[in-house]
Length: 176
Image 1 (cartoon, rainbow, N blue to C red):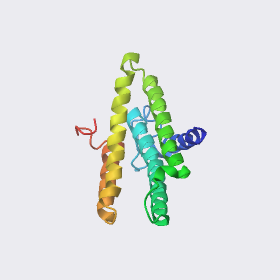
Image 2: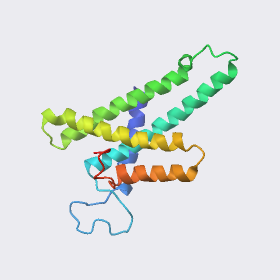
Image 3: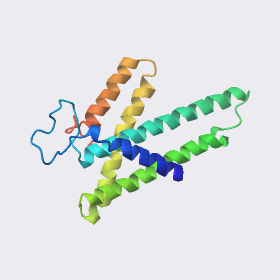
Image 4: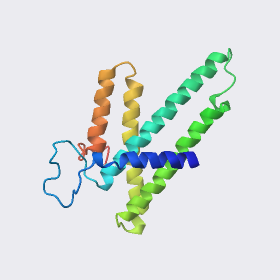
């Protein structure tokens, strides 16, 4: 749990980096004077950035487990052992689970900080979880469906960033 907490703090630090957000957003009429695309520092954008950084860690752990699985299958002539016999494989799965638990707890805190009625916190959490899963699924799809087509993978990743982080898909039913 400590490793997951440290990872989440690093994720939070990266996702809250001021370089991603418009400074003095509520005070300034000219919110983007430097000409660089930046996000509004609001719940949806911050949550999307946290989701993206969580996905980076998820993808790294997934790739490591794929390597562990292929190494164990190459070393065994008969596949009688499962990946669950590898302690590092299990540690990676547990780390992912703990990381998401911390993320959902943090999300509930951020929802409450928005001043929503306490009776609707779980509804808002489910909405945030749904948006996160759609976001992460689209990113996973890019890597699973186009392992050798970097151009198509790039298009799908760009679409995910456009929809989920930049809010380009505001009217799309599949993300709201």
